[in-house]
Every structure is written in C-alpha cells, then in structure tokens.
Length: 67
Image (cartoon, rainbow, N blue to C red; front, side, top):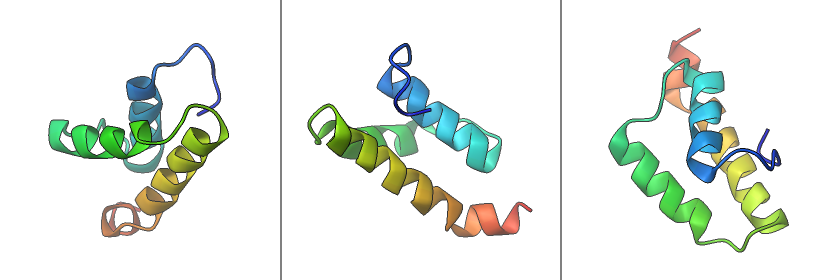
C-alpha cells in the first residue's frame, strides 16, 4: 500500500487510518503524522516511517477498543 506509486503521501496516510480505524485522520493527526513522514528521505526510509506509523495505529487504544 505505502509503495503504490500512484498514491500521494496524504492518500497513503488516509488509507492506513481507514484500514486501522475505519475513519480518515483528523486534520491535527494528519498534520503531525505527515510532518514526521515527510522528514524522512523518499524511498525505503519513508516507507519505513509509514510502516512504523501503521504499527502505532494498530497498537493504539482506539484500535484495541474499536474491535
């Protein structure tokens, strides 16, 4: 998903939120998380940042309680 060349970074973030929480990220969440992701160079490091972000979403209380 995060390696799809046709998705923008914002769309990748949205897809991760939809997969984890069935909702889009709030504006504040998107701003903070995109800032972190964009601080990484394009390529493998940025993909790793998205993977870490997704891991964080899956381990969040919101994910655990939404099941």
